[in-house]
Length: 276
Ligand code: FAD
Image (cartoon, rainbow, N blue to C red; front, side, top):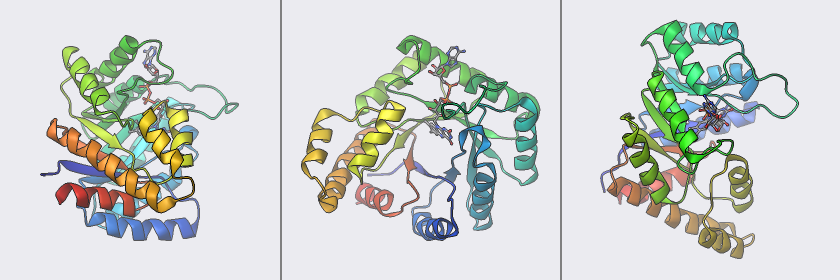
């Protein structure tokens, strides 16, 4: 099966050991020839330097790299300074987000939504950056209604986003339905599917509770039945996620964006399965 473009996401490592492990993972993942690697950004700027230094390291290795940038808790001046730094370092691609502040962290900031961030980036830097935004096939957890969320998504694209990456999901119909719905609103940018490999049951349940991604009952029950048997969880996870990716590819998905969790094995195994 011909695989579409892939991209691979990392978070900035917090320790020298973490940085070393990420280098090793990246070397392995580079063999998959991703279109680019992206690096997350801690809301409120908490990982700002870590995000930039990881992106620069990836660039120095000869790969395209995109920092994520979130606006929650930020001022226009602080975002302007970050954009200037990105531009000076030759960065041409950004994943633009609102972000989520940990509770008790302070005010929302001057830009309330990702659409306002995209508008600001375009006003400040014109067409310099290729901008990706987030999409939620199963609805963003804070949205007032599915229709409101679709409108909010369309606004981000109208503000100047070039493409979107979805939150992860395990039900391909949610993706296809979302794409149909936004096309009806006149949105014609590529909508890349976010793919979360399944390797750890507890971690997956925790993330999914936070971000509103649904784990279908049959997947949940099966994973729970494996208990601490990590090899069975990984083998089942590989079957489920490769099957999901195959259905997405058959349905014309323009790209797959892997939430690698800074690990190479699961993403590599899925891509090998898809090629095989
Ligand atoms: P928005 O698009 O601004 O939407 C947020 C909410 O506001 C939605 O409920 C939307 O319906 C609503 N809304 C939007 N506009 C309006 C309006 N005008 N009026 C009323 N309601 C409105 N988080 C990080 O902190 N760092 C990262 O690096 C990061 N990377 C991510 C990468 C991807 C691919 C994805 C899918 C998510 C990522 N996130 C990251 C998480 C993201 O920041 C959260 O999901 C956050 O809650 C929403 O960000 P957003 O950019 O989608 O926000």
